[in-house]
Length: 371
Image 1 (cartoon, helix red, strand yellow):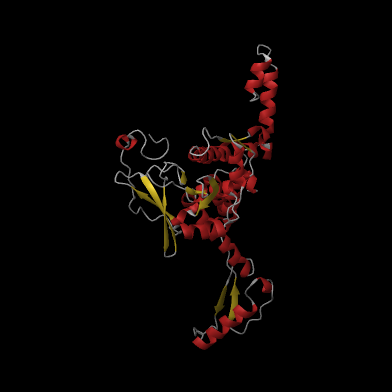
Image 2 (cartoon, one colour):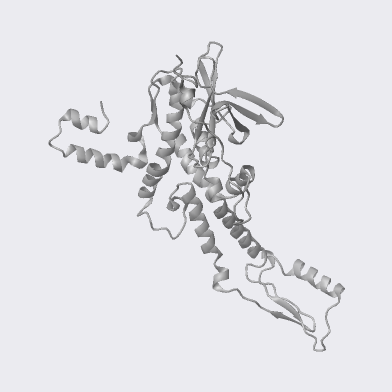
């Protein structure tokens, strides 16, 4: 009987069938990217709030102190395959894409030698007749590599870590799609502000031609006037430059209403929504107007308790289950007592346990996690 893999004690006969659910196109809510690659460009490469949010969670998890049931497991997690930091890479992929695929590479003797995180947008799940994954196809350009889910001995070859997706049995749901609307608003506000700075950093006006006889400018005169305006009076370098008008021309200044000028508020609201989508307290991103947390200590504690530790539990539980084929009773967990952001929680626990006179020393040591 196989302990690991898909065919354990007739398990395949008892499993329910799985399938993908592809929702139809919903109402058009805005013009923002739908593909993952385009969302990465707009939401991660060109948006400081989204990128910093992902980095706060991923780098916090990647640098978390770990303990494992076997020192060899910690060595595998710490080793850099292809230059990637495994835990940080997997965390970022789960946040952005909703899926992370870790390939377990063995040596000539069948011993586990390397862990490598695959690009999730390149991976396709290959299911069996019942919909359960039996292999993964990794496509790079025209080259497709088929990776079995388990080897002949039933030991996993690919670990699939995914975020919860209520409408799909095979693929997880990332945060980037949910934040794409707020990201589009934030980027549009940034482009609008940049255009405002490029145009003298103030609302534009109207150049009115009024000679008094009802005539209008010829096309050549209009084009010449527009070219002179663009060359001599537009842009931040020409801000405040005096304008010399010919006969029949007058400048009519225009103004925007306070609601039209409130792009800063719109941008800040979009930034808070982006931070919320990735589970990061807005205070840690330097966003104004958020009074949820008393100070940065509370915000850091919330980041660890609500974002980093739950994600770490998902990732390390999946890896430990797969590593069980080589390391019996494999276990990986974050050493919470060594996390600086949670020092006050640990101090409070020790103080409460120390004041409990009805507990013995052995019971107190057990409650604070000491053997």
